[in-house]
Image 1: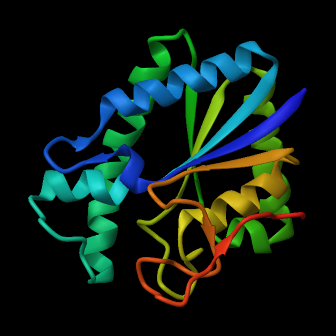
Image 2: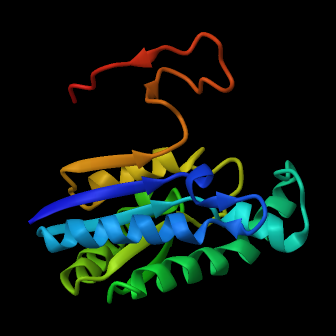
Length: 190
């Protein structure tokens, strides 16, 4: 059975007025259901907790302060999971929340436990929705972004493919929003 990791970026699931774009999340759920129906096991790595929490806290801009960012993530994570649970539920699919930190990849025992948990969820046809545990992750131990987390999860679950849903027009050598020297990478061989 083919295994796929789908990384969903904040800008894909976030909505300025509502916090989360539930119609888009439902469309993603529909596509993932179709992939499952074709025999694929799918793991989702999703951003969006901070964006959802910002709306609930009445914040207009992404917080720079780590405690406020963690508070927004804590408040928003439940909304994010509710949106996924509701959307996948429309197609008769079940989801599970899995929050990871860098320690889950650097400590062998935690790594194996994470792998076993994800394998078990997938064996039951459950779609793991993974996010970084932003409420406890500090700058020193953060993945940087969920693109990095998604690549680590791809290895963790022995997935054949990583699909990144983003508002960026391809894979770049650096973030094109932050660096004018970024270059589009047309082919990735490995």
